[in-house]
Image (tube, rainbow, N blue to C red):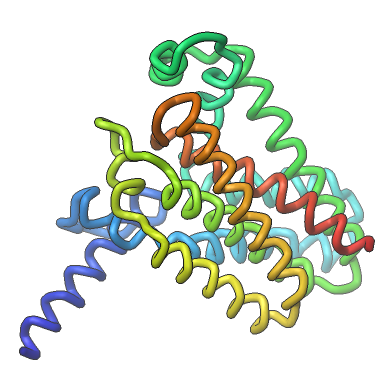
Amino acid sequence: MFKDVLIKINSAIDAIRGLTAFMTRIPMGNFKSGFEEMSKYLVFIIFIGMFIGFIGSIASYPFYHLGIKSNIIVGALVLFIMLYIQGFHHVDGLGDYGDAWMVMGSARKKLDVMKDKYMGVGAFVFIFFTELISVASIGHLYEITYSDFLLFVKFIILVEACSRLGLLTCACCGIPSKDGTGRYFVKNTDEYHLFMGYLLLMILSFIMGIPKIGVLCSTFAVFFGTFIAWNSNKNLKYVTGDVLGASNELTRALVFIVLIFSLNI
């Protein structure tokens, strides 16, 4: 009995290590789990988002310490570090999703555009403006929290965790495709995983002392992730790995906007 439990724990740890290695550039050593096993622990990406947000926000400390008020540079630096840690993994998906969004025609035609190796104007526009919103938002948060570095850190961690909640919701509500790595995550993510992800965000918000903002941002992330899944199910017939990546990047940008609006109301 104890041996069986130990085996299951070791298997879960190995799968989480594999998921972390797949979703980030963090070295995790050797692991045996494949995508089928990793996908069963997709809810763990909430913790990955928290970690990436923490590292990205810490990079702004020298600017706080030295009294540098260049918010655009801080916004660009923090976002670049967070995207680098995740290996620009989801940015690629955002570009492919942008190309598909701009295509007029059947679901098959849209999917073919997503899979080709070329970068169209849709990809450029989606990546440029989505990440520009994030850069500007981070810079604005840096400016309004200039006297409270810890609050800035809390906001970045919250938003980055919410972006993963949007991805998790999209996977939960999506129809799995017949091929590609994304199908494992969509197939093995259900309402239980979504509930656990949402609960983790609630706990995080209360621990950080920003419960109202946390509830608002995480709830919006769930609704937006649901919309992305609905739209993809309708126009592409299912949710692919590229759609999951796009949901992460788009959710981050829009949650930043919701956060800034909530701080000014």
